[in-house]
Amino acid sequence: MQPEKVAETRAWFRRMEDDLRAAEVDLAADPPLVADALFHCQQAVEKALKGFLTWHDRPFRKVHDLREIGAEAIAVDASLEPVIRRSVPLSPPPQCSAIPILSPNRARKRPARPSRWPTRSAKPYSPGCPKRSRRGPECYP
Image (cartoon, rainbow, N blue to C red):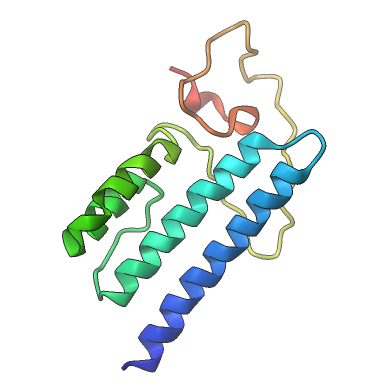
C-alpha cells in the first residue's frame, strides 16, 4: 500500500468529517442555519467522492459539481449510482457563486450585501441555489 495515497485519502475524509460537524452545528443553532448546513452537506459529499476517487487513482477536476465528480465515482463502482443520484440536488447551479473562495488564513464571515445587488423584489432567485443570502448577481436568472 502506498503511504502517500493513504494519507491523501484520509485527508479528504477528515475534511469531510469537519463539514459534517459544521452542518450539525449549523442545525443546532437557534434558529437553525439551514442554508449553511446544506452548503456543508454538499461539501461533505464532494470530499467523500474525491477521497473515493483518490483511493482508486482516478483523476478529477477541481470542481464542485456533484454530477461530474459522481459520474467519475460511478465509473469505478456502478453500485454508487442511487446514492450519488440522491446527492446531486445539493450541487449549486453552474452559474452560482455559492461556494466562497477564501484564503486559509481568513475567518469565514458573511460579506456585506452591496447595494448594487438586486433586492428580492427586483428579480426572482435562481431555484436550487443553496446560499441564497450570499449570492452575487451571477446567481440571478
